[in-house]
Image (tube, rainbow, N blue to C red; front, side, top):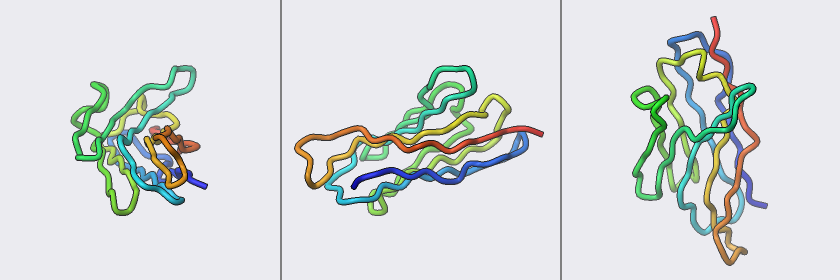
Length: 121
């Protein structure tokens, strides 16, 4: 079974840092684009950052300059380094991979269950 597992969430003070990780497990042939989304209380889910297989990155304006997305293709893992955190960054963060498993004929989108990030003093 192919699945994604996030880790690294928690409580941090404004101005602090956290590093999220998302790892894929199972029999996988390839992972295309990886991305982080988040959903704050009472708000719709929004895209935070994406990284392509070649390492091309894209960020939402709200996190540009503070967050850094990265990936390790050999480890099937994606990271999100979050610096200068603000209370408005409080949300559940979800990872999403476009995956081709060894038994699949086409790529499918997989989502993690989410990890909670709380920025508060």
